[in-house]
Every structure is written in structure tokens, then in C-alpha cells.
Length: 568
Image (cartoon, rainbow, N blue to C red):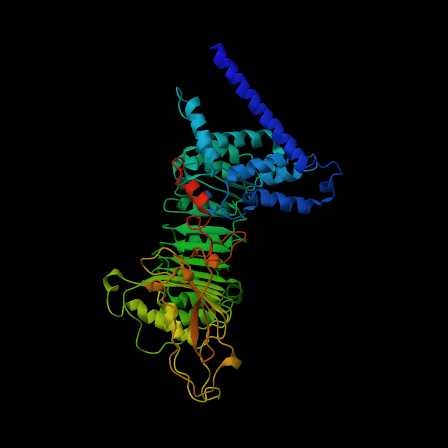
């Protein structure tokens, strides 16, 4: 035994010598800086920008839950640790870093890196004879203790985001935490909070009494009394509200909406009792307020005439910039032109509809808007008509093509459709009419660049195509015509030079009045795109947003697929 101990000591001595040699080599190639501290010359704004890159989620000010607001591919818990270490470097940095640490607090269930396996194994050893601990619940308890003991940190918290299971099982700890957060604007709440569940009664009372600056709230079926409590002037700074499946009087809804001066984003879902009378002007109750974003989901009795009546008021017409329609059968596509004409400041529009019948054979006025920038035109055919020769959705996309070719949407830059053959129909422009430059024959076709995202019924990724009009000076004479040929055929599969799974091409003018598709390098492959405009403080219309399932390198994907990544 003593002989083997001698060998072990010799091996430890060799390891120490190796470490000492590494330190010497590092000092040799990277000498320590002994000059003046240059960071002292940096202003506060520059230091905060650098800290923002160290911990990106500290700048998250969206009104989205924890599982939908991952703004980085890194490990949020490691980024938070790095930012906390920065606060200990210099006394001058402490107030700046600490204010960012507690501005947007995010509690995650796991580390999104290799540390999670190490910590999981360590917890397994320590809790072999005890009940296993819940790490996010413990983190919430530590946060609650910190903000209750430190008023400065409590006043800095404005956003609090928690994992789904934590906010469902730790309602008491969450209530104790929010009771000392006077400047809280958004917090992830359990589902029972939005349905009037008695288990969330204490949490609701604390939030109403202690947090007057809440900016987003939802009211689902069963929370009718909670909605009526807004008449007592709770949460006057609400900016985003979602109302779903409520059984209330239209007069009560109008009264509640009328006393919220900062409300700008409203979602009305699954309200079969709502009709055009909700927008009528009366002297007894306030008018339906002007919204920046109006989302209607499954409101069958509301018609396009009601929307036109709502947009007839100058304040609403000038305020509405985003309109989202989903399964609103009372607002057919054939009447959208009147809505577009009334919404003179509309910039983002979305319609999701399952068509059961084709459009009328009578010619329809085109969809015309000079302010529209982004449109989600997601029309699909009903399941019974999907395999027919000309499904109902074909006429809807033909109507959209005619509107684009007539140059009725000159400001449109981004288009989402659910027809994978739609870019090919755009390239097949109508024949050029002889003497088309004359006033009797106005020119047709695209006059602006257009980014088209397509996705079929059996596809998960959006396919990107950029349509660029041909140069006017490069066109042939007025006698040229015919349908141009295009090499774009994403639905049939292309080679690797077209971008692999996320197939991407650029459609450019061929100089003869038509278009030609060319491949792009693999490094410019797009990521998946969102479908709906999500309101928030930094809100706006939804565009192409990267997906954590498709983005990142191989190491990131391997890390997320580890056996301990059970949060999904």
C-alpha cells in the first residue's frame, strides 16, 4: 500500500508541475496589463450596452411567457451568472449591473449547456436519501427572499417570467414575491388566474393591491367577475388585453374598455354573441376605443360592415395599424376590399381561413392599400375538398394574384401564403399587351420587391422567395409577350445549391418582361417565420423570426436533445 501511495504522490506532483508550466506559458505569451484602468473612461450608457450583450435576456421587455420569449440560443442561467460577476468587478459597475439583473427576471428550469448534466448528477448524489428538490421552485424562493429584504432590487423588477410548472405549483411563493414589486409590468401567471379559479384568489388580490402598473391581462371563461372589477379602476395602465369565451353583456364590455386609456392591443376570441352592434355609437356608454392592434378569432356574427363602421371614425381609422382575422366567417374574403379601403393606415394584415367553397365568378374589386407592408394570407381548403382538381383555395389565391398584378398593393413587402405553388403563379405573368405604355393600356405587374413565404399543408418550414421586378430600361419592345419560363420548383425538390430543407430562391427580372429564379448560397438559408403579429411594448407585426428548433449549430441541437432536458 505504501508503494502505491508513493506512485500516487509522484503523479500528483507531475500534475502540479504541468499546471505551473501552463501558467508560465500563459504569462509568457499574454503578459498582465499594468497600465491605467481604461474602463473608467467608459460612460454609463456604453457599459450598459456591453452588459446587455453579456446577458441578452435582461433586455427582454416583451409581454410573452417564458416559453415563448427565448431571445438567444445561449444558456440564460449562465448569462445571468456572468452578469452578476460583472457587478462584483468594480464598485462603479455594481449599481448598473444590479439594475439590469433585476429589470427583467427570468427563472429557467434547466441550464441549456453541459452544466445541466453535471448539476443533475450532483443533485442525484446529494438527494439519494431525501426527497428530490425542484430547482426552479428553489430559485423562486431565493428571489422572493432577496426582493423582500432589499427594497432597491424589488423596485427594479418590471418583468418576471417563470416556467409553466413553477407558476402552476408555486402560487403561494409567487404571491409573496409580487406583493413587494411595486413597479411590476408583466408576470407569468397560472392558467387558473385567468379563469377565476379560487386557488389563485390570494395571488389576484396581491397583484391588484400591490402592482398597479400591470400592462397585460387575459380574461377567459369563468372570469366575468374579474373583468367587472376593472370598473373599480384597477390596472389603468393596461396596454394588452385578451378576452375569450366570456358570457357578458356587450354594454359591460364597452364600459370596461372605455375606462382603460392606454389600451392599444385587443384580442376578442370565441364570442358568438358579438355582432356589429358592439361598434355602434350611443350616448349612454363610451365608444369602442381606438386600437393599434385588433385581433378577432372565431367571431362569426361580426361582419365587414361592422368593421367599416368602426373605421369610419377618424381616431380609429388613424390608429389601427394591425388587423388579424381568424375563422371569422362573417368577414369573407370577397368583402375585404371594403375593409382595406376604410383602414387607411393599415400596415399589417392577417387572415386565417378554411375555405369550403370557391369565390364568386363575378369580378371582384382588387385588394387595394397603399400603406400595407406585411400580409398573412393563409387560406386553406376544407378537408373534404383538398384533393379535388381545383380546390376552393385556388380561387382565393387567384384573386390575390390579380390584386398583386394590378399593382393595387404598392407598399407590400412581405407576404405569407399557404400555397407552395404561389410563387410560380406570380412568375406566369399575363401576356404583354401591344402598346402597353399608352394610356389606353395601363401597365400591369409588380412595381416593388416582394418577399414571399410559402408553406404547404404537409410542410413545417416556410419557403422563402424574393421577387424582384425587371428594370424598365432592360425590357424589350412593346411587341414582346408570352409567358416567361421559370426554373423555380421548390415543391418538387431541388439540389443542395438551392438551400436544402429551407429551400430558398430569388426571382429576378429576365429583361424580357418576365421573371427567372436563381439559387442562393447555402449560408443565406432562412429560418422559420411567425404567423401572427404579437403585441407588446416592442410590438408590431410578426415577421420572419428564428426558431430554436431550426437555428443554431450542431452543438446546440445536441445540447437541447440531452436526456436531462425534460422541460419540453
